[in-house]
Length: 385
Ligand code: GLY
Image: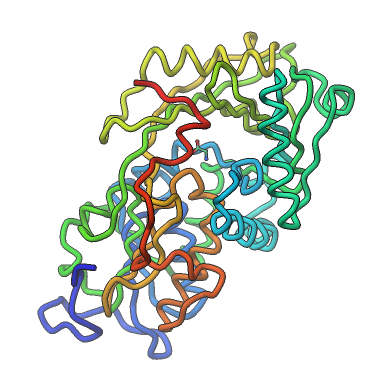
């Protein structure tokens, strides 16, 4: 790892650092996405004076958190072989149950996920996931058509993988709640672009800048993985949105419908195209077609928004969380799971500020051998060129 971001606690070339609380070092968090805000909140709760820096306004960060779907889905996103990611996600989902009431129950928009199957190949794939996840002690179940219809009458499909303990959150309400919680804890916010970690006056720096973290920490491998996503509003007389998150694979492409108070978020494409955030015609066309297969009544909804975000992809699908030098901690590379993994990441960051390793996140050491350089689950999601 490079010696990025300073040479220790007292750096005479920096401006005078902000005062410490009870002797705890001051912390600058670079990135006001969900991961950065959770880390800032946890550091403030642990007694550190904290400042968050982002190019976007507080609550409207410049990154994937604003665009996200908000699924907390370690089991339905699970895939045989990714045992560390499953365990990490399950541990963070457990933390979500404690933290959601603190942030406001309105943030949670769905309880339970159904991944529907349209053909026998889908049933076989979902059965594989169900057996793998179930064997690791998590609550999952295959449902036939009658049980699926009883739970979600408007949803198509002949069977479904049910993950009843998964949640979904409204990512934008979450960002607002996190900023409010941080402010109440005394966290300061600065709207700025950080180009040089050395110039930050704080004692410690947490880099939580998503895919852009590599530019600040060149030894940390995070790459942009584009995702397009739609927001649809239910109109008077439209079929109601499902109560649960509903997912499927349609024409080889993954699609998910995540409930919101006023409608649905439909996501997401996944492909690698550098830092391009243009929304393509093909992306919108395919998402709408695939979502309509899942919920035929969707055609009557109002089209509100199409956006693209850049997931921070890591070489092995696990995030990098931990120190890269005496002063700097990285919390990046969360891929498809940033919202899910934010609470456990925050605990791991606070442990790192103390000089400890959170055992549940030990697999996320930034100095680990990251294995193969394969892209994230692309075989499952279908890709746009
Ligand atoms: N978390 C779902 C996605 O990245 O599309």
